[in-house]
Length: 289
View (tube, rainbow, N blue to C red):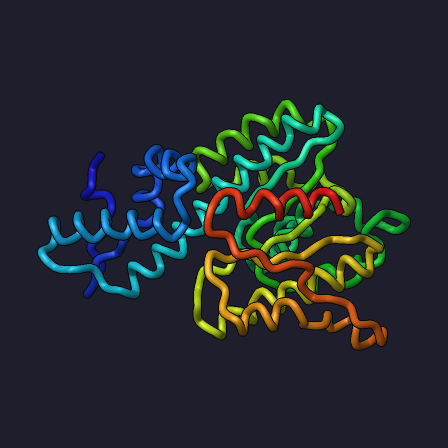
């Protein structure tokens, strides 16, 4: 294990390479997850290892802000590992009645004029022909180039049987190496709207302003789901939720509900995950709705 790769000198600061650290410690992290240690305990352990080797290398402590940013990334990677392992186990119990997959999406970016990709990465999961007249996405076709929003953190989808041989090893690889987009890349342009079961936002920051990004994301996705006559569920997941978070996420109305005069929920469920088992109930709810 080369601890020198954990850090990169930059102008006026030392960058903590959180993803490299996670990969180097991944075997131990999975052991700790299997021992049912809490997420906060595991992140604290990674922080301590990082601080120790940083001090050993540079003679002083890393900046708290850099450590906090890395902790947010470790939280994401742990969540990806946990979700992947849970869904692998769930699929074994389903006896091939259908196959569930979870995956991350790439960050949203402005549409490149030289290709067919849309700015919203979730819409790129659907084949471009799906937006044609008479097709499943016709109702949002005229707006597809005007839809801008952050990519949700995770999708839970039910996939066609023909994709299972390709997806199974990718899901296993994702559980062991969570920093990849292989499943998204495989499924791009292959899904239909009814394949999507749930959309997940992972909250990794306690800053109050950070709760409004996923709410905007939820508002856009719920409006798209309603327009397409789908029942996409939107969930908030966090290893630490404040009382304000719970109040807002549990009671916020979907903006299109105001237009329709209906009290439509914006967020379908809020889950606080501290251990592996905490997400099992959430996954079962998401795929059974």
